Length: 111
Image (cartoon, rainbow, N blue to C red; front, top):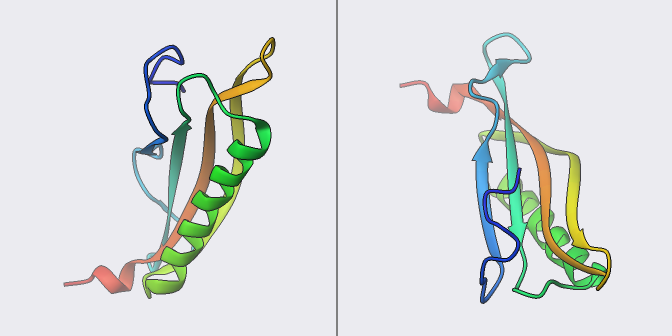
């Protein structure tokens, strides 16, 4: 899942958003669809502590909750899992991947 090598010079936190579903699945007839997304979080070169990375992961989850609360079309956003890449010797984390399913109302997009 890493599209940026961990030895790449990253001067600040980088986030990459990907639609992994390739298509949307109908969950409740044609009124709702599920969109699967992955958010890759790359931390500063040299890595971050577990607490730092957890805080950044929580910031992403909070931002998605705020998007959900602000958009009428989004019914729910569910966290479905995560993966972490880390340097065992130095006990530093270099990247984290978060997976979410966004359920949205298609009626909002009918023209």
